[in-house]
Image (cartoon, rainbow, N blue to C red):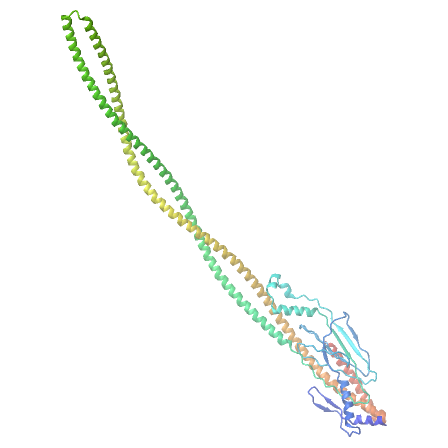
Length: 552
């Protein structure tokens, strides 16, 4: 009897459903309770706790490569699981754990899908679970092929990091585990669970922010590329100007080298002429000295000739005097012979002495005549030589004047050539400086071309990344729309399941009431009708499970 009273109290208690918003719905009319309210409330709360079954999201690390599915058949217990994967860097698995299962939460890019766990009425609770593990997807990123090692080392963008994370996540394996352990306390009313869908943090906003950042980076790189192109155009214009200047400098250098070689030849010629002039001047000096010596010799010869002439005159006078004396002596000798015939010895001696003196005087006179003739001949020769030297001296003076004028002219030309050589050396230094500047500009052009090539590669990479980000955004939006549609369908299925669960709870309560109190055929027909409706509800729940299974 106490058990019947408890059953009546359960039948007469309110069956209340609490939806997601917290609103309460009375599923049966309220009756007077014969049992204290505290006991009824405690039983209702226990039944609610057993039926609610907290819905959690958990990430299960992959352990097995084979997908396993375990679903024991039970009339009183059933379960549903929703497993979904997306292409976002995070993968979600929805787990409906039992009271003893560990709970873990996971953020997802879109709203989480609420799951409904239905507890059975069997006294021996059974447990059904399935484990799914998606195979690894060895998908190679397209961008990793586009990026060269040089550009990859130089450019590290957030998009590459996100692509790397996407690749890591796509290569990872997910394992979905759902375990349901229904709990039921006999004699307690069954109430539907209050399920509040967990709000998953939206990663689509983060993707949008990342896409915006990538667009900003692409714009920055585009602006930098435009600036580099502008600078490259300016540098190319400067390089063209430098090339023109270099060509002009090369032509100027060629002309200067030609003039330099001609001036060098002229300088050598002038040096030779100068050397000849110096040699002629030396010869002139030697001839002048010789002329002076000849003049001195002439003067000395003239003095000597005058002296000899005086001596000759004196000798002639002496000869004349001696001749006169001789004649006088001859006359006296004749007179003495006539007067004195006895003095022959002494006169003969004097005669011999006089004859010897005459011979000596004749010899001396001959010598003086020869010497005078020789001196005269030498004097004539010296006069002729002096005349010739005088003519040569006059010629040399004239040539000296000409050579002096030529030397002055050549000295002025040499000064001009020195100035031109100095100018040519300055131009050569200028040409060398321009050549060095040209080499530096060519190096800068090569560097700028390499920078432009790198920036163009970066631009292509950024364009490809932007296209991939657009495709990813479109895919994420499509998946988000599909997920939202699936969520709406799941909410509808959940509502229908909750309604069916409430009807089932009423049928079970009525069945127990009839089993304890007994009823007529009408009650049995109603019970049969309720049981058929429960069977239909079970088929509906199977369809819901299939739908949830497809939603993974």
